[in-house]
Image 1 (tube, helix red, strand yellow):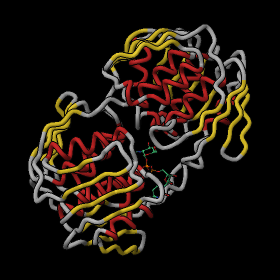
Image 2 (cartoon, rainbow, N blue to C red; image 1 turned 45 degrees about the vertical axis):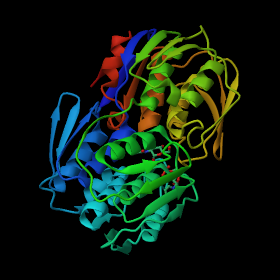
Image 3 (cartoon, helix red, strand yellow; image 1 turned 90 degrees about the vertical axis):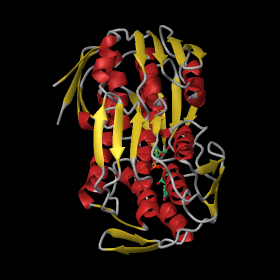
Length: 416
Ligand code: UD1
């Protein structure tokens, strides 16, 4: 298990070019299998989850190579339609391959995704929708076996705007016969990126970014070249890293228009923001202010993925902040670790009351999941003394070379 060692108290100031979005690249890489040819996916971040996704593609028989920031997927020799248990267990988001593989092969077998540190993460909405589209699904011995000689469009209403379910339905719908309409669809910017990619391949998807997505089935898709959107969660994490140390940071290759709820909370905490089309400049005050209430919600609400890094800000802010986690039931695992560093946080059910303290202290802490790990990095940057963060493999799932970017901005951070 790797460790990050951070000597806190250094101001994080400088410029960071934001990586491509993990949550966009995973479904887009899965979608490459729907065309027979060579897709070039640019701005692909170097992440453990991307490596796992390319491994799935290779096991399906695709050729995959990396050239600079691009991943090139050749699907011409794809011969398998089954994702084995070890890969499904390691990365739940492999479930997104279901719609894509069924679309290409008319059948698919994936193992049931196991439990996950941040919550139950069921896939009932995915399966219900696919059944509605004519997919016959049998759940046997921990495997989900799907066959669909004919995929048909239909009106699908999601009880909850699930990101993964919306993506799976889009993937299944693009080559289904007739029209698929998803109501109460997820509106996340990554859904828009997937829709744009599919349309570039020749699909006819409309309404991405709204709660009603309409897909007219087409006969065939072509392999294309595509550039992944910037990662809004990584961008907000670097803003937090600078804000907690009172620094000044400029983010480039970023879409501020996708980050409204996060930027609003940051400005409530007292930072000054200057946003341009693809740049954000942030100047932090000497001490951050508390924020009244942060409630995680589907987009355009405040993202669950940035709840924990922003809680680190509140832990050192002037005053009391309340965080309410409505999306995943286990997304407070960083709190015990922040408490070890001297944070004053009380949890009741899905709410956390954070009383800002004057200072945090370095400690030995462990990341138990991706964003909770990022929260510990943010806190450690401002803590006095040295913090050792174990469980870096979680952080590497979503942050490309985090120590390199932070070091370039003045942080003292190394990996062991
Ligand atoms: C995606 C993101 C993740 C983010 C989350 C919410 C990827 C790879 N991951 O995850 O980073 O935190 O969106 O923005 O894009 N649910 C059901 N049944 C289902 C599906 C979901 O009950 O069939 C519930 C989940 O348990 C959870 C909620 O819906 O409580 C949100 O899940 P969902 O939007 O599906 O998240 P993911 O797609 O797994």
